Amino acid sequence: MTPRLRFAPSPTGYLHVGGARTALFNWLYARRHGGAFILRIEDTDVARSQAEMVTGILDGLRWLGIDWDEGPEIGGPHAPYFQSERLERYRAAARALLDSGQAFEDGGAIRFKVPPGKTAFTDRVHGPIEFDNEHIESFVILRSDTHPTYHLSVVVDDIDMAITHVVRGDDHISNTPKQVLLYHAFGKTPPSFAHVPLIMGPDKQRLSKRHGATSVMEYEKQGYIPEAMFNFLALLGWGTGSNDELFTRDELIQQFNLDGISGGNAVFNVEKLDWFNHQHLVRLSDDEIVARLRGARLDAWGLGTDTRSASMLALLRPRCKKLTDLPDQLRPFFEDPAAYDADAIKKQLSLPGCADHLRALRGSYEQVEWSEAALERALRELADARTIKAGLLIHGTRIAMTGRMVSPGLFEMLIVLGRDTVLRRLDRLAAFL
Image (tube, rainbow, N blue to C red):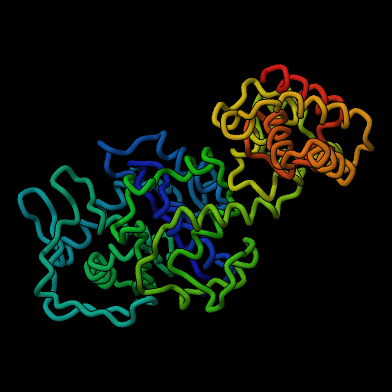
C-alpha cells in the first residue's frame, strides 16, 4: 500500500513551530516511502479562519521546502482540499449515520451513538491504547447550524482522501477513540496513528509566545535559514539513534522512520537553533549567501561573487549565527565608521598620546608590504619602539576600521580593506582623538 499522509492546519493563525514539525514528520515519512503528502485546510471555523492565514501557512511550508502532492493551488484527485467547500459531503455522511441508526438527533444537532465495549488502537509511538466506551459521551458530529464538528470532518476527509497514516501531536490522543468509532461506523479501517511528543519551552511548559514562539516566517525575518530550521525541527522528538545531528534534507528523508519518534516531550532551545543555523550557514556557498542577502543597501554596496566579496564572506562566515548578522558585519568593508563607540574609546584609547601612536602606525603602514605578516610585524615593532603594548595599537586600529571593539581577524580585515582605506581611517580616528 502506497502511504498517503496529510497535514491539515486550521487557518486561524500562521504556521507555528508545532504545526511545522507535524508537517515535516508527515512529509519525511511520505518522501521516505515513495508516498503522497496531502495539504488540507480545515477552515470550518468560519468566525476565526482567515484567507491571509492560509497564505501564511503556504508560505511557511514553501520556505521550509515542504511541498505537497495534492492540495491548495495544485488540486488533485480528491479535491476540494478546503473543508469549507466540502460541507455537503459532511452533511451527507451525518445523515447516513442517522439513517443507519448509529446517530440520533438532539435539539437540532446530530450526535453519534457510542456503542458499549472498548475502543482500542495501536499507536506507532506509544503502543497499544485502549479506552472504555462508557467514558465517551455520545458526541455531536453535526451542529444545529449544520456545520460539522472536527471529529466528523476529519474522518470523512481522511476516508475520502485514502489517508493511510495520521501523524499528529500527543494532544490528539484523546480524540482518537471517537474517530476510530466513526471509521468503524462507516465500515472503514482506521489509518495507522502516530502521536508525536509536544514541543515544550525550556521551562517544560507547552511552547507559547512567552518562550519566543512565533510564526515560521518570523524566523526567516530573524535571519534563520530553512536548512537549519528543517534540521532542527526534524530532531525535536525524533532521532536517528546516533549522536549525529547535522543532516541535509536528503539525509533526513533516507533515515526518517516512525520508530525513532520519542515518547517524551521535546524542548525548543533557541540556543540550539542558533547552533544549527551557524552550522548550516557555514556550509552555504558564497553565491548562495549573496543570493539570500537582500536589500537596497547591499545592492548599493555591490556585494557580489567577486574575489573581494568572497574574501569578506570568508572572514565573516565563522562569526555569523544568523543571516541578518551579515549586513552589519559587512558595513565596515564598504563604509567608514559613522561614529566611534564611546565605551571603546574610553576603555582602549583614553591614555595620552594615543593619537600620535596611531599617526605613527599610519606612517608605517604607508610604506610596508601589504600582507598580513608584514602588517602585524610592523605594528608590533612600532609598539616595541614606543614602549607601549601592542594591544593599544591593535584595539585602536580595530576601532578606526569599524568604530567598535569587535571585528573579524584584524590583519585579515586590513588586507581586504586595502591600504588607502586603512590609512584614511587611521587619519580620521587620530583627528577625532
